[in-house]
Length: 113
Image (cartoon, rainbow, N blue to C red; front, side):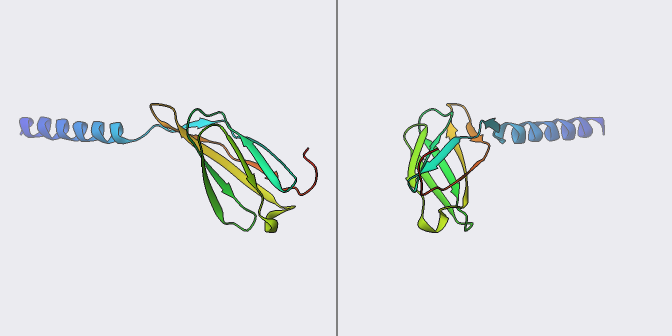
């Protein structure tokens, strides 16, 4: 009976250990800095290498962009001018995927701030 309990306990601990090892670590990167003007926007991340951007437009649709570095420069869709847009990014730092906080900015048709 004791042997069965020990084997069962060891099996449970081994399974939990494998589950913990398979769970990726999530570390928060800072939210990007973004600004807009002339119907375009620019975002800068604290990332290295390939950066995947997620942009949530005013309408609720989501755009995904991939850049070779830490900056994104794109055009605001006409339907989003004057409205808030949210942006965040992720990147692989060599050991884990890092996810940023989200920033919000207004897509502006006028001059850059």
